[in-house]
Amino acid sequence: MGPLSEPAIPQLLRELAPQVLGVLVRRHGDFADCEDAVQEALLAAATQWPAAGLPANPTGWLVTTASRRLIETWRSDSARKRREDNYAVGMPPPGPASAADDTLTLYFLCCHSSLTASSQVALTLRALGGLTTAEIARALLVPEATVAQRISRAKARIRESGATFRPPTPAERQGRLPAVLHVLYLVFNEGYTASSGPRLHRVELTAEAIRLARQLHAQLADEGEVAGLLALMLLTDARRPARTRPDGALVPLAEQDRGRWHQDAIEEGVALVTATLPRATPGPYQVQAAIAAVHDEAPTAADTDWPQILALYEVLAALAPGPMVTLNRIVALAMVEGPAAGLAQLDAAQADPGLSGHYRTSVVRAHLLDELGRPAEAREHYLRAARRTLSQPERAYLIARAGR
Image 1 (cartoon, one colour):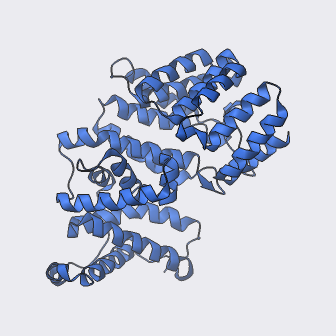
Image 2 (cartoon, rainbow, N blue to C red):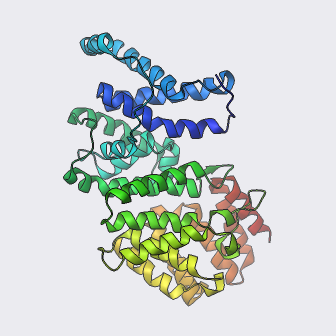
Image 3 (cartoon, rainbow, N blue to C red):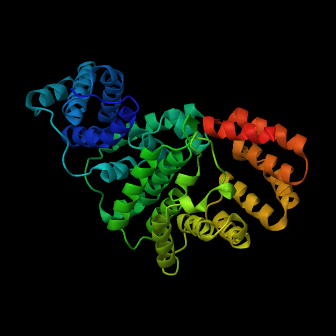
């Protein structure tokens, strides 16, 4: 056993989870039962390791514990007794995971064609993305109970389909690619702006999403949306050093010290966008990357080319309409045509259920009211947004804005 700081345990477990799941699925074949067993092993580790210390072989510990949970599950189900006996007799001793990185293979397995798109995303975020059911619900803008049902049904459907652990065929990869990209996008977003908790960033999530996007781009260099997503991640993550003050307080984009942005990431992201847009079929991630590039290339906030950003959001709204696209387009419109025009559009969009109760809608409304010289109303909406967000840095920022 060795010492391990408690904050480091969740990150280590998140990194090891796909490796352990890959070992169990390759060995036993039943994804649903293996995923449940791995989740129980992760919970056991999170409970025991802070007190007992880090095992000499953390991966082996998790594989052993998950394998035992798996056998216990099979023993409790008499209909599976024969299968349990067959596996238990010839099961090799648990050991370290394969040196191969199984994570992308597991992503494609979770995005099996027998599942609906929403179930693919929910299952992958739960099994591999390191997100809780509550975090997934906030990312997808749906109730937590709905997410839980999707995950349960998805695991049952994968079991019924007889899916096996193997790299996808070219046709399967093409069909499942949009779901895999969507999951990586959501994992990155949760890492870049955590939906709850004391930290604004969960760097372990953004780093893992970028790592997997790089792997995917290396395999599918001609896929425009893969390049677009990687570029979007790089261009967005480049701003991370300037997004918080030393005390963890949020710094909005317009007030950030752009000298602290990662220029190498910006250059790589811009190069990807520049090379991809002329030759690839336009897609949402490429357009979002282009928007991020416009922000990152502006020397100051005042130099931002808002008309170009607005035009890009018009394209994005046509390609991938959604509540957050609508909200961001309204912000861009307000920067071009003035806060009154933005507020009028926000009023018209308020009927969208995805916007009506979202705290970011209140943030935008507060900002526009402030710009229009209506501070009392702005304060009310800043405080309303602060009550609704579960992110402590965002809440502190919104309360401070309300107090100005």
